[in-house]
Image (cartoon, rainbow, N blue to C red; front, side, top):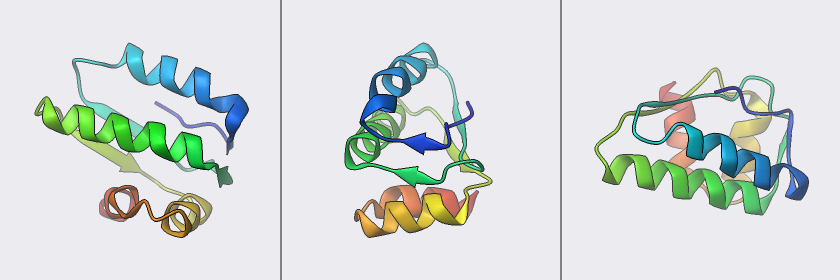
Length: 87
């Protein structure tokens, strides 16, 4: 699933809907185009990662942009940073 360029308040609803469509299978997020992430979208991504992991489903964040990693780190979302750096 390709993440949008801007993950702000306006992107939160569509992000949650798109993630929900992938329930039950592997979660493969392409973060290559992300330029900015807001707090709500970080919370949604963290909730999704934890949900998939608790269901023993694979989770991957691939090709994370420098901006994705920097924003996640700034917001304290180290779980996302670790996944992104693992690619």
